[in-house]
Image (cartoon, rainbow over all chains, first blue to last red; front, side, top):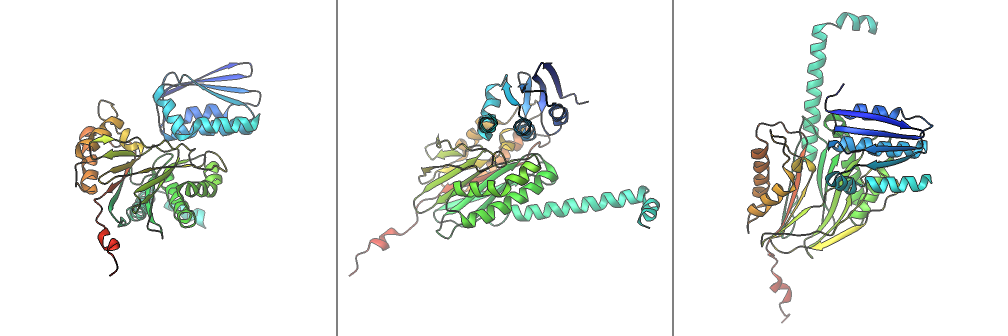
Length: 108
Length: 279
């Protein structure tokens, strides 16, 4: 149990939404990674909601990148929502959006 | 035989010995990393360059390096491996090897990053990791700085008139993000006394006791207020580390802190000798 992060999962048919609350970093990534690993083959779309994300470091970014690669392998789509300006700039700088765009294009 | 030996030895003293061995090995690993990171700073015509990396733990995942090219240019790289501590340090060594071998055989920073990504992509994906790096070629003869970016923050340019420059945006995916990535180059011309500060997010995300971040604004202010004419890059480096240290106070360092500073000196080439008419 980690007090710094809470990941809530909501399933609605083929859509799985993960609400990330708190800090996604080196010390808290396990609950998020666990949810990614548990995504089953019936899911066609994973939405990650960052509205209540207060901080993300490079390890947290690594978890997002892994989710995108997992999505490409298991053939589901990833949508990121509720991103504030600061996190948006970070995703833009490291190339998260380009990876999503490129891998989901290949998948389609 | 081994099992029996192990069970007999598996008491408190054996644990102490194992801990001491581990501590010794970590110290040796730190020495290796320090030696490899803090190599000699190259001497470049009409410019000064310096680099510094302070790991948050015993060893870290930040990286910078210099490579003097046969044509007189200096290739600079700065990077940040995902994660912290020993795993990041191991990947930092992998990154250094990829840079050193790519720098030798590629024409520019874009090609260097493309070659590094090709060499490292499979390993990084297997390890669910990535590295952000910015690679730049400094040509002291033409004063052109050409760079390519794999997911890293752009450098800060400070002009002597106390103005911040606006380097053309070079965007590229982190190393290990996508296979077969081609990295585009951007370039700009520097003037005498211009300063370029390459840095990692350990600086801008340094935190104080109140939970505030150091942020880019403070780094910019520190550079602007200390980048006086004729000041040495080592002195600027010291001003930045002091400013971060004053800001963070007793708060433990959370991330590796790394910077590379490049300053254009006054042109000291005696051009009159080249222009003298042959009598």
